[in-house]
Image 1 (spheres, rainbow, N blue to C red):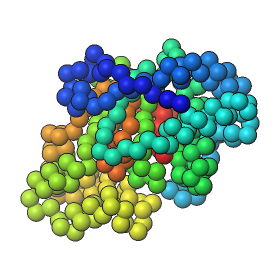
Image 2 (image 1 turned 135 degrees about the horizontal axis):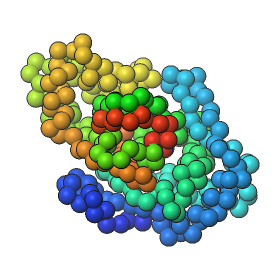
Image 3 (image 1 turned 60 degrees about the horizontal axis):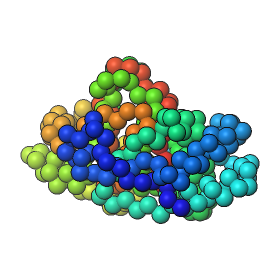
Image 4 (image 1 turned 90 degrees about the vertical axis):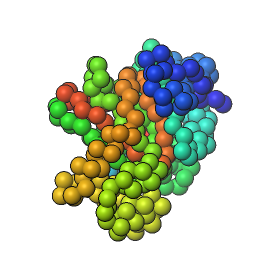
Length: 278
């Protein structure tokens, strides 16, 4: 089974160098042929469940009890998730287009991703081996500086849904290699122990991995650090800013790419994007 097919760069993004060089995908013809079936099963099943974990800061994930699905549809889900699970992202940056819209509603997409999450976590024998975490909401006039999630799964697939019009809420993307070997190296007298700690985060050598996200975020953006403004200035020179609209998104290796959100005057809703980690 083929889940995605490669497409040309959408016209609105062709002048952005990195986006123009990256591969772009959309649903395969095989998946489009299944869209009506996915919609029907999504309506029959209802909204995905929310499962809570005691670790990773009492995090949650959307999921679906696959035993409740129609038998033939469940087999289809297993085929789809098998294809997704075989994706191995290294330094690549993949973009997606038309994933939500005329072919698949946001409710059906949410249901599909929750089903995939359920099967992938079962395959890995770990409830946290694949995650579809609910998004944190935010009030108006906000940004979300670049970061890495540091969930146990390394692949991050973000598809946008409720996004504001215009250039609000630009997606921010930065290779970890640029952070480690260009940005930090450009900061005079950057503490050697902090640099070592940041590097170890990406090597998985930090024992308290539950808090790796907070460690990195505070070291890069904490205003108590004398280097915070210098880091911010350097990041602005290297970061890729791209406005991704409804149905568009990207997939990266969370240990190879930092990501964030540019300024938005509008509130961030829980359906701003759907994210699968696997």
